[in-house]
Each structure stands twice: as structure tokens, then as C-alpha cells.
Image (cartoon, rainbow, N blue to C red; front, side):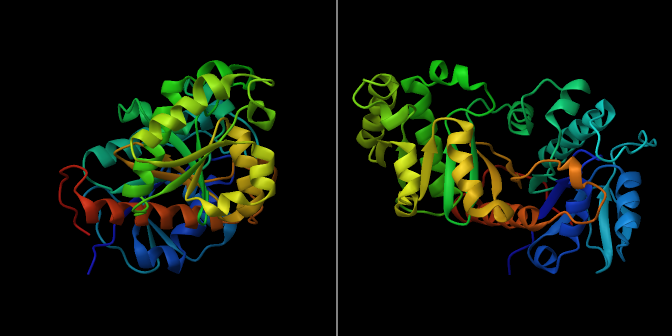
Length: 345
């Protein structure tokens, strides 16, 4: 029988829906069946939202090594020994950004010390995190830095619809300058490697999107495809990878061609995420490929407009945990990623 992995779940921005979806998720029978979840954040925050949502649970602070709790208990790892500032639901505040960033740092520390097997991050406000002293464009880049990972890739998934991004949180005007042949080749390798090792796909097929309208139309509408994308595709084929493209993005998604492939490499954020979120917004999951640590998150944001109303849907967070557990098992079935301390659970 497989040992249930221990998954650390960060609280996210405490003025948004992060704590709510985290609490709803850890009390889900689907989640408890496959893992031992540990909330990482302020006990005050989780108690506040538990009371607000009228949840019939007992919150219990715990420290490593984490032990099995009773059915109605929810484990919290609280890295702070003081009361956090006042919760201000639905508003961007720098203190919320500061503490949401610290929760992520503590989650990575727990993983480094072998206390947890992976992390699922609740949504944060990039604006709040920046005002709170965190200068990373997003959680993906922050976790990559904390784990000293130079090569990584943001992936979004909705069921078997998988999209990898060649560039992430950058202005559109900068995308073309960042898409060198080397970058596209590296992202294709990362995507191929992740599909095999994290998703257990023996011989993955990858589709590559063009950057320009009509994929450049032989250089008549931009030459990035000719200079960088096509050479990267050819290089990947020489490495025996099943890669095709570049495809014009509109026709590719309009004809549902993504169903023929195990994953799609999009050139920039919205090119890949708009069609994926249209397909499965409530079940979408963000996964950071290329890291030693397994990190996933729901594909939605802080949703300040509905925070505190008790109507946030935890489906994406539940799917994020299910994916994290699946990847952990897939990696362990192939080879140990690293030596870790023994868990108590």
C-alpha cells in the first residue's frame, strides 16, 4: 500500500478566496483519501474563515514531523508566533502580500527539510506581494528562485489538455525578443521530459504554436518562426522527440487539434491560457515543470470580488492536489528524486 504523501497548502492572500478554498479542499473526502494535507499559514486567518464559513472542523496547530490527525481535525503549520494584521476582505494590502510570500518560503523550507512531499499554492495578489517587498513576477518565478532552479516552465492543464508556456509573466511587447531558438528548444525539452517523468507518457507528442498571425506565413508576417521556432522544432526532432509545428494558433484551437497531442507549447501567456480556460476553468491546474519540488496551484486568482461570501469553488484546488499526488507517485515509481528524511505519517 502506498504511503499517502504529505501536501503543504499555502494560505495565499488572506484578503482573497485563498483561505476559503484551502479550507474547503482539506475537508474534502476526495483529498483526505489520497494525501495528508497540511495548511501553511496563520492560524488566526484560518480560524476567521472557518468561523465565517461555519465549518464544523477543529483546527490544530502542528509542527514537523507531521502526524496523522483525527477525521474532523485540520492540521495547520503556523510559521508566525504573533498575530497578523487585520483581515481586510476584498482589498489589496501590502501586509497580505508580505505574509502570502512568507507562507511560500516556509512551504519550500518544509520540503527542503523533508517534512512534506509537495506544495499546492493558493492564489496571491501580485500587486500586494510587490508592495509587501516581493519583487518576483509571480509564485512560479519565486519558487524557482527559492529552489535554485534556472530552467523551469509554467504549465496549465485541464484534464488531458496540457499547455506549456515559452514565456510567462512578461509584457507582450517583450515576447518576440525573448523567443530565441535556445529558449524554445529548452522549453520543448522541459515539456517532453515532464510529460514522460511527471505524467508517465512514454512517447509524448507535442504541438508547437507560432508567434505571429498565420505562423508568420513564410516570413511575410514576422520572421520569428523562420529564425527561431522552426529550427528549435527541427532540433527537437533530431533528438527523437515527436514535435510538430509551428501551427497558427487560431486554426489550431479552432479545429480542436490539441486533442491529437499530449501537450501544446504556446509562445506567450494568453495565447495558451485563453483556450485552456475556456475549455475547463473550474478544473484547470497550474504546474511548474522542471523543478525538483512538486508544485501545483489552482488556475484562478484571488477573486477579491467574491471573497468572504462563502461561494468560492474549490474544484480547481482539489484538482491541483490530485495532480500533485499523481506526479509525486509517478516520480517515485521511476527513480528517487532525492534523499529525504522519513515522515511520521
